[in-house]
Structures are given as structure tokens and as C-alpha cells.
Amino acid sequence: MPYQVIIPAAGQGKRMGAGKNKLLLTLEGVPILIHTLRVFEADAECSGIILAINPSDEQEFKSLLKEYGIHKVSSLVTGGKERQDSVYNGLRAVHSIDGVVLVHDAARPFIRLETIRNLVEAASKDGGAIVAVPVKDTIKKADDGRVAETVERSSLWSVQTPQAFRASVLLEAHNKAMREQFIGTDESSLVERIPHHVSIIEGDYDNIKLTTPEDLYFAEAILRKRKE
Ligand code: CTP
Ligand code: MG
Image 1: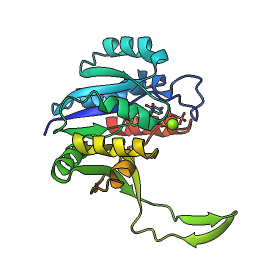
Image 2: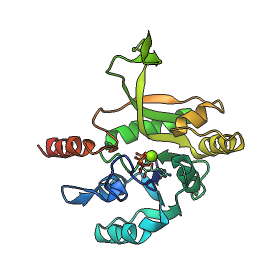
Image 3: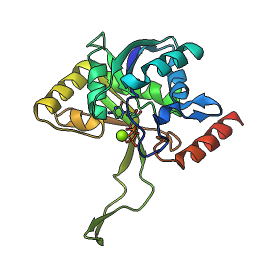
Image 4: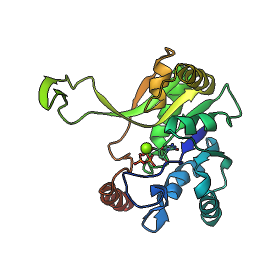
């Protein structure tokens, strides 16, 4: 099943504290951005990558695409203030409103092809699907530094990307969010407000988002493990 993917890469990486976009940091000598792009470059079903970037990163990103032979980037769009704005700008570059569009954070380089397959299949059938893993920790609600409640864990999921939707559904969700000035932390939260059904595809715990400096240690370990 063919799909296009929007990859938001226009953040500043503040929590990583590298003094530059964290996607330029390297794992085994290769920039995080390239690790992520390679997954989609290698997937025959991926018909195009729409990359949302910061204008200040444009020259460097373009030369990395050339250096590492990434040919599937069909559009480079300017990112926005929030991640949601970057995705919206990417959405305007999608060419088929009837097709499936994925949104995947550039900062999650370890997504597996098999998960993408399952996700795309679910999204084309149901209109919307997300990758998630069951919550492992005990979760509590707090009030003023005190435990207010222990939340029943069996129905809780930690949500990752990619998230996949029929492009028309995602566009409707974004337009509604914009009209109502709603800012969500993922695409699904916008689609849920239509309201529209979103299915869960169980993914892997190692599909981590590289957010803070210690995540780089985990990332090196995941790469080593995959080479075994
Ligand atoms: N992103 C984006 N546009 C923004 C903010 C984020 O395209 N305005 C992208 C990031 O580049 C990243 C993904 O969205 O690939 C997930 O965001 P996050 O992990 O929060 O990255 P940053 O925003 O760069 O990091 P931080 O929040 O620590 O500054
Ligand atoms: Mg951010």
C-alpha cells in the first residue's frame, strides 16, 4: 500500500542542549536525521518524503541529503512555531488527498518496516491509526505534590510515531484545530476531536524519541543490538 510521509524536523532540540538542531548529532558517525530518512528511502511503498525544516538548517540538510544519497524527499517545507504547524505545512504539500499519509518524527530513527506496514494497512482501512506500546510504569495522578489517584494501567498506552491517516481526515482535523485554536501534542489528538476513529498498532519499546542527552546512550545500544 503506497503512502507519503511527512517528517517534522524543524525543532530546536532545546532539551538535548546541543546548541544546534539535535537531528544533526551523529550515531555511529551518521546524523540522526539520516538514520530516520533511510528507513523511508528503503521502503518501496513510500512514494515521497515531505520534510519540514527550519530555514536556518536548509543548507546543511540539503548537503546531507546529497552526501547520503537520499532521493525520496519530494518537498522541503518551512517548519512552524509548534510541531503541529510544521506538520500542517507538510500536509499542504501532500499530492493525493485520497491516499494515506504518515507523520513521523525525525527524532525517532528506530521505527521498523514491519510496524509501518501494519500501520499503513490499518489507516487505509479505518482512516486513522497510531503506533503505541503498553505503559510499563505505575502511573499516578498528583495534586500539589501528593498522590491523588493511582490510574488503572491496563488501558494505558505510550504513544509514538508514526501516526497514519487518510490525508483527507488529517486535513479536516488540522483545519478544525486551527479554527478552534487547539494545539495537540500529536496528530491523533486532532483527529479524535473531529471525531474520527483511531486504531492502535502495537509497536516496539525501542522506537524511542531522542529527546534528552541520555537518550543518545540508549540509541547507541539499540544500534549495537541490531547489528548482532
Ligand atoms: N518539530 C518540528 N517543528 C517544531 C517543533 C518540533 O518540526 N516547531 C519536530 C522536531 O524536529 C522533532 C519532532 O518534531 O523531529 C518532535 O519534536 P521534539 O522531540 O520536541 O524535538 P524538538 O522540538 O527539536 O526538541 P525540544 O522540544 O527539546 O526543543
Ligand atoms: Mg519540541
